[in-house]
Length: 212
Image (cartoon, rainbow, N blue to C red; front, side, top):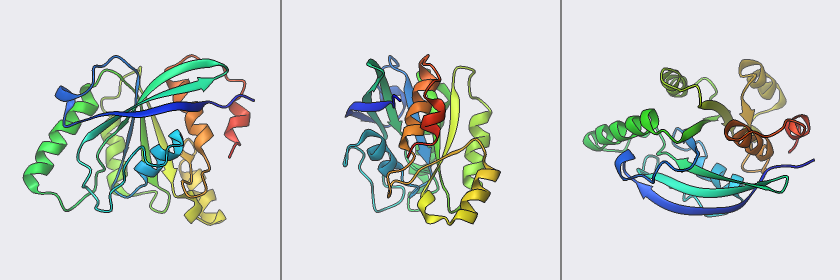
């Protein structure tokens, strides 16, 4: 079985808005989620780089759009993909004026960035029905293009017992789960990223589905 893996990952730039972002010359995967969902840990886990994405102890402190260029290797083929880390939402300790500018910049980026091919919405498995997450999903569904895809990934799955995991699977049958603590679930996310952007075959799909 061949499993997609990232062999290169580098931080390129931080931007405040779409106007000072990188050129739209590479397919992008956008990671979004509320503060403290484990976004930085997920990016570091996927890329196997301990400190590629910097996490903050203060929710809402990371206010920039961060760009990372990665290169996948899958069946001896190379696939370049750009990861985009958006500021976490659901923060509180940000001034009202900054919050207004921040929201405007993010809305413009999310709705009009042509190179976005996949939205990965990270949600906390301990709070699967959080209203703010439901609102974000509904918002993106209003403008998502036919060439874009949306993937829900629940983090912190290791915090649930088996009964809670079974209920999560029933409530969100199409979602994926991962544990940054135990480093489980990355393979399926990698595969979904490549499948969403490039034309790859499905022969490894079932095996990857059960991979840790």
